[in-house]
Image (cartoon, rainbow, N blue to C red):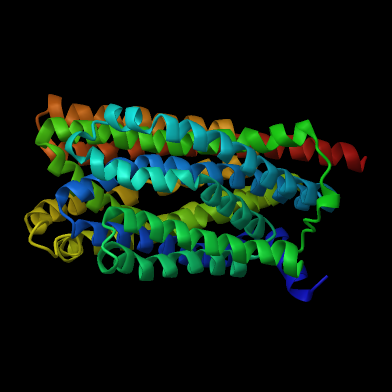
Length: 463
């Protein structure tokens, strides 16, 4: 076993504060690269006009479901592997990783068929309207290669679960950098239009999957041993993975459902142009949330290890510390978003077809800068619950925060109070904060209960 692999395991089983920082920083780089290539998609597509950009807005919720499938199964595998590593059961840790890969193949094949068959109906239901031609041109290709994105999410999670953030980051960097390079070539040089954006994303993801597969089965130098001989089908393990995977994936579907609801409100309030404005501004918000997602992903692994080792102090520290640094980072980012809203908006209005959107995008970014301040305590609590295998708790927090409170307050502020588009943005922010606060209180109560149980078991075992 290599020295670096030992260091990775020592890191995730040691001081939770150091582990969170060491895991979170590479994850932030990974997420930054992912968001940069998502923004690159939007920026290059914006040059095709407002309809093309709005089409990306309608497809984004569906694409997030696609990515969520892989990330959900990955989160389930990550949680289970981390708990087995915490319990020092490495045989089951290997088996858990292999179950995650098998599950990713089965699930992606099922959903590819379902999404491809009902694509037109889904887009019509979402109200794509005049943009449906662009949306179909993009979506049929992206969803046809679902297995690549799902497998990529699981493979990356396997590296993260054993603390190997370097290679998890490299794999994502390959995808992002290739996509940023290929986008303008496929869209404009090869004159493929919005289809070019889809092909750039697909080709980049395929190459990244090849690289990760080589590390796992060609080079074979992971801490985990993913040889097929280590696969021993266990229904309980499949269910354990799904207990985090299904709620985690449903959370992504909730975010997508929220986006569909918000898009509908925007269309009612100001037409499809408002969707283009919201799509552009939310790209910036997603970029600003990268540090929080990076910290949250680190919390998942560290919490899983602490829970598996029955270490209540590490679990409490991981939760509290992640929220503290999350709020510090959010305050800085929120201020920067507000101050530079006009400059950020200019990225999406560089052509004659999209120039008129700039002031509206700047206004949206200004209001939504508060969103990053409203989310740290909620997202860290959700990720802690995923780490300990309580995916359903995480799902309920997200359901309350996003689908219920954000959409309800957006409706009230916009249509009942008559605040218009800023009311929709403000409702999303307020709903997020209230829902996150409820999730935080729940997490604190869970950790207190876990401490009581752990102490009783320890005292009983030591007598």
